[in-house]
Image (cartoon, rainbow, N blue to C red; front, side, top):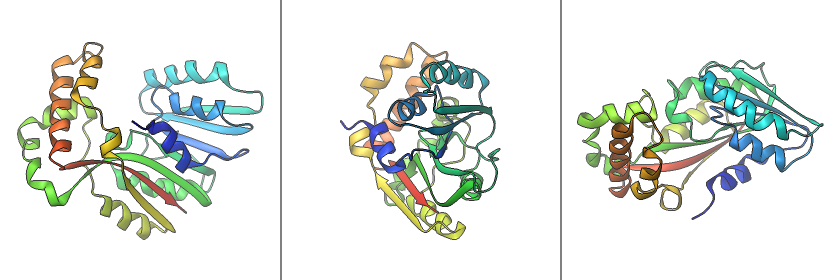
Length: 226
């Protein structure tokens, strides 16, 4: 199995002296990986959950090099608190499916990226050719919302391409990583006992595994260049 974070960072291509924002930074693992692999850089960690943001701070600050800085911001991915054309790279690794509006996130990403800047995100996408297997969502969607967030239904790869080009991105690339990266229930159930909503966690991941096996859901990595 490939290491997904490595593949994401290859596409992000962090640049020394640049400014990178990790939107929905979680516990800061990806920014920590970036910090350890590069020299001077300005990092921005954004999260809407103050508890996760504090954990990211605890994980990242101790390992920052003297030539590096990291700003930790409590904020919304759909209203990025950054100046126009102030960022070289934006990352949304396994967070886009939590955003209340993918469209607003992409609009703000385009606004805040410098010319030539790059956005890389990972997300679940619906495969319209297999959409007839998506019917369990009607009955068991509450478990998905409890675990993955009360977000809109997944987009298709084509929706990302259409909106990205409409906003003005010069390149929009969607890659299907499903076969190599999607965790099976056997792996995910290892974490079930560590969360507060064990039953919902188990049912949500059973459902996602069903969608993936039927080809109704894909795991995609999207790269957009301004």
